[in-house]
Length: 238
Image (cartoon, rainbow, N blue to C red; front, side, top):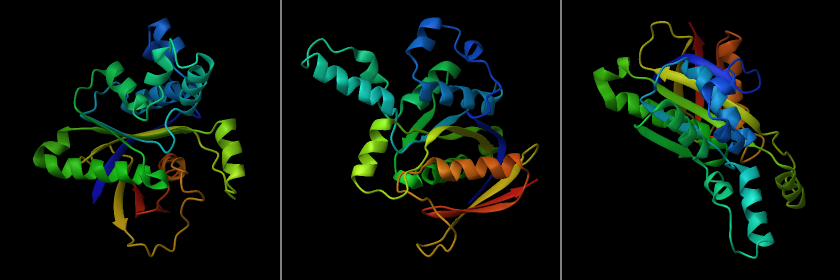
């Protein structure tokens, strides 16, 4: 399955101003860091365009808000719980925030398949473009990966004996379509049927690794073959 990548953005080197993206100060204060990272990276990838679909991937979701909510359950003895941490603790929080900010009412899906989450999102995007047929050349899809590693999760992984703990923090977003005009790169997904000889994720939940390597290949303008859990992602820069 092939498609074209038109823009890549990362929260590690943001150029957009969150105040411009989210003018409401109250809304900005309620956003956790990972939500802010996702919103900024998505805005940069979209460049003012409104996507026809949003696909996000996350192994852990918004961990900080999840921990905050669980602490409030204990501290309040399960009474008078604040709703905001719970609402923002779900895996689809970032995708929902992007949709609300950009007025997107179309397809919106979040994948939580461990290290293969981002690949699943890319596959879904390719299938959507194929399903749209001739209309696909005029449509755009936003695909991204977001994750965060908290001290609590790091401690739990150490106790469980996880040898390689991913340094998962940040967001990577890509705007893709079936139209090659003005594209940065052509991307192809090639299933390896469980016999992949390329390096894959170091940890079952290192969902950002594949997105980071795709972002690096595109921004550095170099062809690459990225080994994933389910696919080899072939990048041909244009």
